[in-house]
Length: 423
Image (cartoon, rainbow, N blue to C red):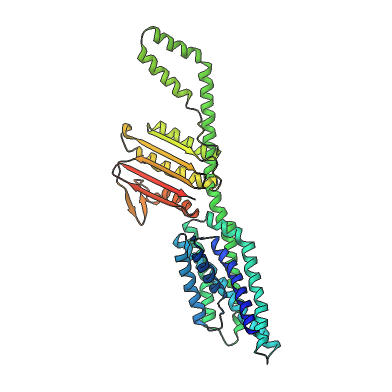
């Protein structure tokens, strides 16, 4: 009977551990390998299922170290997110484990003060279903919020989440390390830790993430508004040209009759450029197309030689705001660098492609003459306001990390290249 109960207990522990594992996967991408998957599942089951008793220094400290090691070694993602997950999730897991052991023990011996044998094992196994239910509901109800946090929160927001969660983290260890004889005195404090960290998840997803998302949305709406204003201006210009087209053709005809072929050719090219200066369709995505049109026209105004190859019509896995962040910031940096060169040396090449295998690739190469400077992994620009140094590429990096892609930046004396791959 004892062996059967042990086997049932292990199955239940791995079941709860699986839901805990799924919660962690909402933030971090597990490294792909069946052996690594088993290590992740078993390791996180040990973290969430470790029994914690009053004044139990070992059983509350060792799972924490194990949790951090699993995050660092077996999952992919940014370091700050891995540490934030440990500080955010561990107080929840440890609190549930402590309350399960402590409350369950007190309740059992209150009703069965003389039974410490098989009855205790049966009740412990039966009541562990409450732990499974907790992690199941936690995953089912909060997984949308967890996914939203991963997609939207930037580096500074994750630091804020970590700082907020440190209060519960510190309170948990203080309560367990220095549990009084009457352990039920610390139950309200532990419940407060549990509620605080769950509330932090909801707060981050509902307010912090929505605020960041809204700021970017407003920025892109301004870009779209500029695009439509520019489109209307170009259409008005074309209407004027069509209205006066007979006069324009008459001028060209007179120049040809006079034998002034070079002047006629120049006049025709000028007229052609006006007619073709309307809105271009780079892709079917209206918001992204607005960004590309605005930047393309600026490139034309600055006399920059350009090459655009955009093929992302079927791209659904990356939201519009993230795409606009990538295109707008890298193009702004490229245009800024080119404007420091003589007009005959300015060039920008942009290639974006979405492949059938689900990978989005992006490459932008621009000519440059200024020296590239780095400070704390941030590229420094020539802007007078130091607060805006490297903000553009930092925003792009945040997007790439949210989608767990790769960002490669390389440069020579006369060229700067950014390559992004997201799959």
